[in-house]
Amino acid sequence: MDLGLGGKLFVVGGASRGLGRAVAENLVAEGARVILVARDEGALSGTARELGEEAHPLAADLSDPRSVDRIAGAVSGMGGELGGVLVNTGGPPPGRALELDDDQWLAAFGSLVAGPIRLLRALVPLMGDGASVLFVTSSSVRQPIPNLDASNVLRPGVAALTKCLARELAPRVRVNSLAPGRIDTERARSLDASAAEALGITREERRARIGETIPMGRYGEPAEFGRAAAFLLSPAASYVNGVSLQVDGGLVSALP
Ligand SMILES: NC(=O)c1ccc[n+]([C@@H]2O[C@H](COP(=O)([O-])OP(=O)(O)OC[C@H]3O[C@@H](n4cnc5c(N)ncnc54)[C@H](OP(=O)(O)O)[C@@H]3O)[C@@H](O)[C@H]2O)c1
Image 1 (cartoon, rainbow, N blue to C red):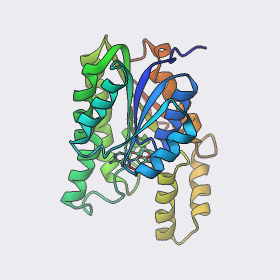
Image 2: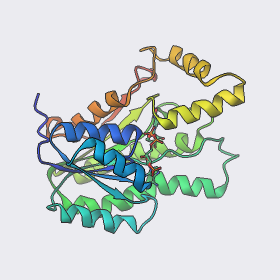
Image 3: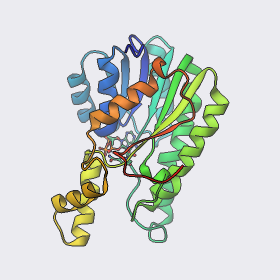
């Protein structure tokens, strides 16, 4: 199937590693041009080199309001019409609701809700007909994850934001979200390491125990997430709007 991504321009957040990188890699493989955004310039340049000449690094902090104009400027500098955005950044800190302090709550809100709204305010006007916005959320939109309460509280809000924007931006722009369960990235490894330490077990033991709770019996690979994202971002998904798609190997079994 031709996804119809050839020549289209995308902005991909959190693109230097993990899920964002996998999405950028799939988009480039399908012929798209991608502006990669993350904070660490060195890591981002390395990723861009590996992805090839259609990957364009732009070092920026998505929590910083000043980044928005720079990203919009880069889009205009590359021909203007934007095919879509992957709204993605680092995850919130682990912790329980009453133990996270006010600054941590505000930072998590800034990163997961306020920053994306600010970014889309600037980028949606640059989008062409048939463009696509895709939020990265979490399995916490369906089921709280122990000790990750900032995600448990704020991600469902992003799922609601997806629904609001899917109504408000259609038919010109589609808006969906992808909810990863356990995908093998640096963040998943680091969360596993902290949980393992608290439980007095090794990271491998922790990972094996979680793997047993996933019907597919294992963590997902970033590329498996990247392929689902490339589809939803593409014109091939032209009638898919307002959806939250789990990419979790069947981890969340709640209905509906
Ligand atoms: N992996 C999973 O299984 C899983 C499950 C549920 C939810 N998620 C969520 O999915 C998102 C991506 O996860 P991941 O596993 O790919 O994480 P990751 O491996 O830690 O990668 C995060 C990426 O985001 C960039 N980033 C972080 N903060 C940023 C900021 N303020 N501005 C711009 N870029 C920023 C990082 O680069 P710099 O540090 O250089 O900026 C990096 O490129 C996170 O929000 C995470 O909570 C992941």
